[in-house]
Length: 146
Image (cartoon, rainbow, N blue to C red; front, side):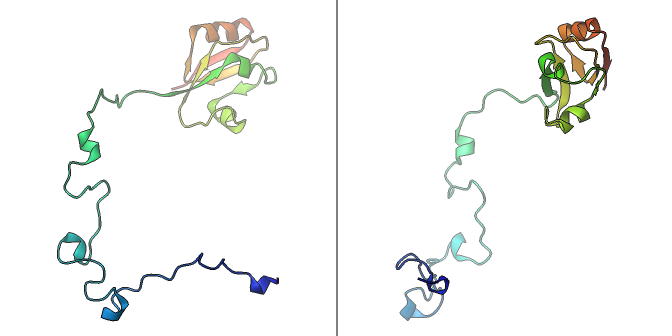
């Protein structure tokens, strides 16, 4: 067998349905569209979620609760992650994104899980009470950014 002899297996490919090529083709006259109706017309586009006039699934399912459009989502980083950096490193959301710790799409919140013994300059949108105390206790700097 050579490269030029390669091809799909017998029966693996199917010829396309040739529409509108006369009565002998079996797909002539109405070209498989049937008689009249929306789908028979030119320019027909089925709307997403349209179920032929039946009440769509989206409208049949009961709705629960509501979405608060003012909710602020935070990227959470614990102190145990920050303790792995060099002393006196300035930690910002951009720095953490660069290092692959956070995605950087949300605001940054530092939580106090873990211990920290090195001084760090931490800039974040929010700090937990314990995280703030632990960073300051390790002679670090805490700056809240908006």
